[in-house]
Image (cartoon, rainbow, N blue to C red; front, side, top):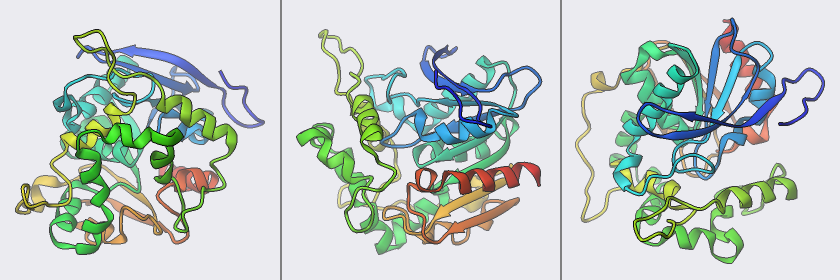
Length: 315
């Protein structure tokens, strides 16, 4: 439990949802459910629920704001099988979490891999998404297009193929998490201002939570769940053994809910080409570009992100 600052809602941590599919998700929340709309906040790699701490404190004042650890991360369940990390299973967790919390739909805000879940829900379960806010996470159809045709995006996403390989989890955490911390660096290779010693300690603790129990009684690696997101997805830069796929019709990937995309334009992994043509798959769309924002704009400019989300909710 975190004491709130003036005007901020109190955050309650350490809650668990035992879902109908057998998955156990850890989550934090702010606000109360009675009579308030539900807001779900979905983090990405290599993060956890506290990515959204500033948003919980803000929107918990007038919503029931909930941020889970996705399966494979931090204190949520960590299945052993790679197939368990296909995005349809992660999205099903969130659909069932909404039901577990006593709702039939939610406002969904999401980043990175959480955004992949949000897009999936907006495309295939629009009845459960009242509004969708996506921060620096590519729509799957546009990601397929760019990975197949854009050498710049292929190069920017090359790390995905490394993460898909065997032993990448050990490489991430070697030398006191040296490699995984590089994912957070700015363009100059410098740790960002938001990554304070206190935040660093929190991330190191989260990256150290043991993985799933294996049949031989040992546990899988703490980072295996996160790496399995990359191993399970068909969306990655083409290789000789796994060439680019033909682009399916855009009509099969239409987002059927009101959508606002917030995009930090200095993202080193996700180029701005990923939002070119987004109106082909989103009918009700507004894009907010943050010129100086990186992939981690939620951390860099939490008040600005809150303001953009608030404007969307009241428009």
